[in-house]
Length: 244
Image (tube, rainbow, N blue to C red; front, side):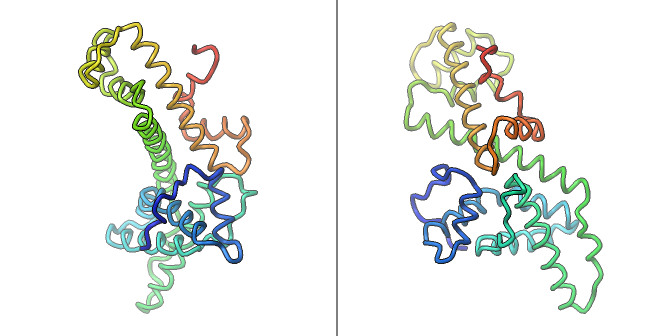
């Protein structure tokens, strides 16, 4: 597979739909192709898990997932319709259809139709897709927070929030001591509490940005629906005035 263009940043694109549109426009420039490739690779893990939920054989699932990723990277988003609202729904449909088509071709090649009925996506495959998409969104939010800390090491928001996740029952003093040990700089417990609130807010902002990118209509109402659908509302409570 061809890697995305060096230096390409998916987070520099307003929405995931803009990648889909640009990559399929007539005479799409290399940058658009690189964007599409980066986009597919970004969600390759979710694709593999969904295919694995549809196809019970691990070996077949690996083969099909690889084929789906390659075809998506080549531009098989031809039926993309932002009016459907959510990029993850488009991607799931594309993965399911490509999986069925590939499996049908393989069945014909082997001289058998057996197995096609097994590709009607079961509920647990859909559940796996939702769970993996949720995990992927959270991973990307963490990555955004870590990248911010690399370029702005003070304050160490990523480091502190990770410490809190790893030690949820630590007292304020214990958390401050752990942060001081990580950074080599002393920090008071009260300052640590303020920094933790800032870290949670920045994480929430990164999470919201990730979700907005996948919505054709990133309105507050649609965003709230997506947060609820993926069980992510608890992560954005720091963005509400009453939480401050």
